[in-house]
Image (cartoon, rainbow, N blue to C red; front, side):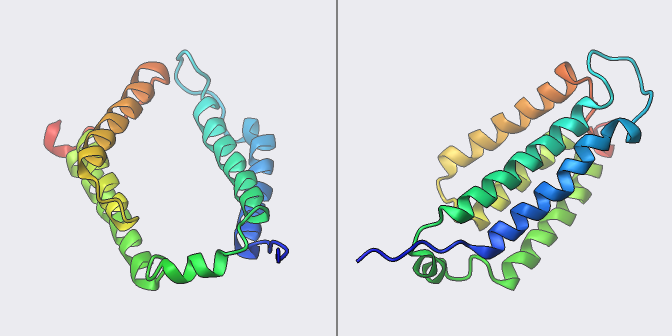
Length: 160
């Protein structure tokens, strides 16, 4: 017998908050940024891109909450400690480690390391895929930021 699907209320609320906070930022963005150095893109391009992605992800999170499977309780139980407070503290610790590494080692060195740490916490264990993909993704972000968007990412104190 088919049971009706339940909406994951937490995901739906979080997606709605992200959407409701992001939309006013998109609308009022021209009032926040003025002037800036001359480049191919305007000073609004990157902030508008980031907020647009956040709004889209908020909508996708709400949609995923509505279409969530009827076995969501079983999936949550099988996830084990995936959402425990210990892992949340680890993520916060990794965030502060990333800030520290960004200052000293720069973007290209610290980002792949942090990506591997987060992937490991998310149960990623195939390092033959994780290591090259984290390096390639970091280099691609650096290239897009530097060449296309004319944004200098941190080089690091050790490499200046």
